[in-house]
Amino acid sequence: MDQQLLKIIADFYQDLPRQGPGSTRATKWALSRIMEMGAIKNVLDIGCGTGAQTLILAQETGAKVDALDRVQDFLDVLKAKRDKLGLKDQVQLHHAQMDKLPFEPESFDLIWSEGAIYNMGFTYGLKNWGKLLKPGGFLVVSEISWTTESRPQLLTDYWNNNYPEMDLVSAKVRLIEMMGYSTIGAFALPEVGWRNYYEPVSQRLKDLDGTDNPVLQSFLDQIKTELNIFKEYKQYYNYFFYIMRRPD
Image (cartoon, rainbow, N blue to C red; front, side, top):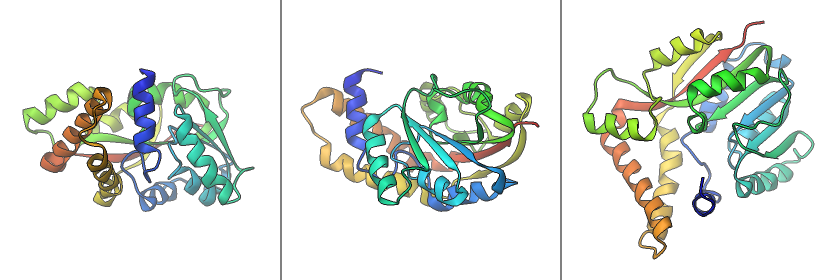
């Protein structure tokens, strides 16, 4: 990604509570679906952002958590939160790319990624991130998915251009099982998870719209289009948590 655009993204999102749709309740619910919680000692949070879910993972599991993101500004915000909660020894931060993970195979009992696997692609994430799981380990991701078989062509075209791997939940579950995982469950993100994300984003748009920076304005226009698409067509898609397990 162009460094100017990466900086624009960092500046836009780093002071917001979330960098994508989600909620504390949804994170905790997904965690509650994992069996043998007490056996989880090592967790990897991929695309952690400023850590809305990272700190929940640490507090709920008591495990050592490695949190990774490509945006250093996000990690700086997470570091301040972590240190304030006294979790410095428990949560380790890593500035790295999601396709160049600096860890040994079979290092983690749980790999977590909320709203970030689309950067690599769902298939890529399942294939490559899964190598870092210990036998019997869990992979939990939230992924945007269709909720209906039929939908307006404009909406289909929009998401085909932005994320060609978007598919029905049933198709995602089939893929999970084709790739050798067992499916623990899949559940939809409650609408409050979208509000948690889009309400602060909408306010930030109002503050910045009309800038004389053409790269920034292009980015803002893309966000506005995304917001309008959601308002008009949200009944056709949602984020889903997919909870899966690598065989022993």
